[in-house]
Length: 246
Image (cartoon, rainbow, N blue to C red; front, top):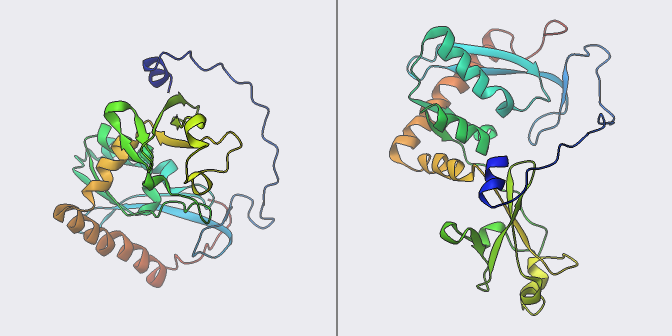
């Protein structure tokens, strides 16, 4: 992030003294190590997650790692991949992952490790009703900006602490725009588009999914790791936690 800001002539971010976050957290009285999971299409409750890797040829489990269910899949993946390479001496050529791993960090990590990633499609967060999508704006890398449907170039403003570049419009132009109401409700009449510093890597990995090779890899993922989980649930009692704690 600091390197990105330096390229644009910006000062380093000041160190931020953060107070310990204070929030209410659901804790199971029966099993405090379990994590409360809230996911679309999944039951809510206290669970554990099995982060599992299998080989693409035979479906042999090469790694399994248990976390509370409120730990996102993408948080532990690269560390588990490195562990397998170090432990078994694997040369990993490709990895098929579901949409839960569709993040810029995973994409950049795979490229840094010379692993060709094929990741499932993740639906973008829809805008508020009546508002334009981010996809209505065209990224112009040569100009380091985004072009709006009316032709205005949103120029680079800053890079935030989370690694997102911010591109902002000119309010003087936006105030007279016929699409203002559907574009932004900002009091300054200013539209902001964000782009992660590793978004280029994410787009390259996303493109792999659409190739004949990528489609074959993704089909194989469903035939191996999904079958492994199904067998574990149906044949080996993996559907429920039989003991407390990890």
